Structures are given as structure tokens and as C-alpha cells.
Length: 413
Image (tube, rainbow, N blue to C red; front, side, top):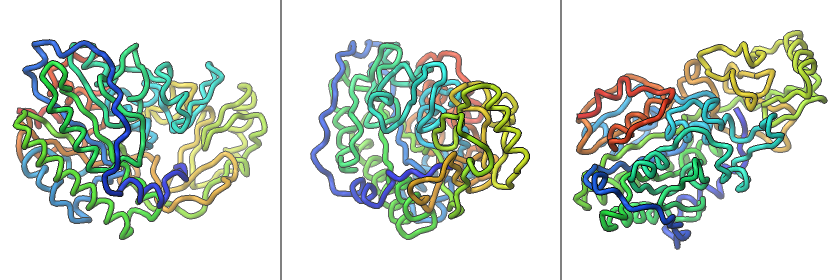
């Protein structure tokens, strides 16, 4: 839905480079693992950003295919929350809340009540815990006397509910992919009181390649096979620890080839009295919102639908937060939408669309380990259900959330 210029060939090359010196791990002096938590199993949650649900069938992925055989998978894909973009869905995976409930409704958005703008690229906002609602798994673990560690994850650099993970890093794509795995293993080699039981790991490779070259490109194939090799390395090293580790490999969203012509909203309605972020529209007054809505309806375009926020279709779960703007523009196909003409051309691949109408948005989900039933093919499920699944593996009590363990219960021994 939005063209993200930061996803460039240079970034792809950096993220796939050989291991370099790692950014120092930040150690938070949280209490040690409670004795009761030390005997519990471990969960390593890996995100392969932008890894579409069927890439493992389109490309050669022996490591992920082995995970499907040895554990659980969802061949028809996991459904991301709307909008199917990176920060909202990564935070959904670790809170069990839809974006409008956890507050991160886009990569960049305005909060009319705060009179402030959140941007994932702005460290002042992305690391400010007051923007984030819900209880991320690393916070849940620490609150219940279990140590956690994050090798990158949206929200993990913020102090949320007065808690940080015991170990985390500032985001730095120059850190080599093998180095990331070695750090995970080093954490698992810590003494039991200090050893994290919940660990996150993040790779952007497939998202970068999909944006820059398209989902059907040789470069995307190379990125898919590279991260699959990383999963193979991680599997082997986790096994060598001798610890009872459940490995979960998933993604935030899929990828689709974009229509090369973006939709520019100010050619359909007067947006002079709006604050805008990408395709999000924030009217100065209710009258301005209604006037623009009627102008959009007077000049309909098959590439998008327009709604007053309270009337957005319920299936999208995108109608209760002022951060979502009003009117709300919903694309009907693989169209990049902007309030005003973009300064730079669109990327080739994109995401952000409704996964119910565009299956290319669906993501992978694989799980294996001592607590996972082998060879289970799960039906599609919503990514809000991952949180209670992970909490069950860790033996943690969950707060009220949008997700339920649902079909994922069939994967647990």
C-alpha cells in the first residue's frame, strides 16, 4: 500500500553480508529467573519479514520444509492483521491485539489527541513506550519472573509498562546474519538464573528483495534461500545446546507485485484542510472530513473504496482509533496510495492490503520442538492467535487479548 524507499538494494546487500562486529547487547538489570521458571522450556521466535506463505513451495527451502515435517505448519498461510505492514503486524504477533487496539496502526501515523506523529524511522517515537498498548511477550515474561531477550523486534527498544527485555539491541542492519544466530546461542549458554526463556530474532532480507526487485525475481529467490540457510544453521545450533527449545518461524506479511501507477488522493478531493501521512487522512474539522468523503464518492475510482471511519467493514477491524484517520481509504488491489504525489517512484513489490481479498499478503508459520506435534498441517488462522500459543508454550498467564489459541492448540503436545 505504501512505497518504502528504505528497502533498497544497498540495504539488502548489507543485511546479507558476512558477519560483522555486533552492536553491543544492552543488558537491563531485571531480576533473575524465578526458580519455578528455570525449569520451563524455551521459545525462539524468528520473523522472516515479508516471507510470503507460498515461497517455500515456489523456491527451494529445505530447512523450512524440514520444520514442516518435524513440526507444525500452515500450508495455506497465516492471515496478517490489516494493514498488512511491518510494525503493526510484528507488534500484533507479540501482543495478541489488532493494530487499532495496540496503537501501532501504520508505519507512520498521527495521533490527533496527542497532536503528535509516530514514525518507525524516528527513534524518539519508535522507542517511546507511551505509543504502545498491550503487553508484549517479553514484558509478560519479565512480569512473571522469566527473563527475555530481543535480537530486534518492533517495539523491543521501548520501555513498555515500565519494563524492557533483559537483553536487547538497537536496530542495526549491518550486523551479520550469522552473528545474530550466534548471539541467540550465547544467550542460551548463560547460567540458568540469567538465561532468557523467550528470545526474538529478526531478518529483513526477503522484504527488502521483494520491495526492490519484486516477489517473483531471482533476487527474491536468492533472499529466500539465504534466510532458509540461516534457519538451517539456527536449527543445528539449537539442537547442539541440548536444551528443550521450541522454534517458531513466521512472518509479518507477504508480498505482491504492485501496479506501477500510484493513486494520488488529492486529485479526487480537496485535502488542503488535512494532515496526511501516506494514505492516512486527518481532517481539521468534522465538516472537512465529510466534505472530502463526499468528493471521493462523487469521483469514484475502482482502485480504492472510501469510508467514514466508523463505517469501515467490520472484517478489517480498522474503525475505532482516531490514529486511523477519517475518511479511510481501502485499496481494492495492488495499488500504492498517497494523499499527495510521491517524491520518488514506487517500489516494485509491496504489501499492506486486505489478506482476505489478496492471498499474497498471507505469511508463513512453522513450529517445531519438544512441545510441538510433528507433521501437523494447520488451517489458516489469524496472527492474533500466535500470542496465546507462545504464552502456552512458555507457561505464562495472558491478559485480555483479541486472539485465541484456536486451531493452534492442535500443534501442542
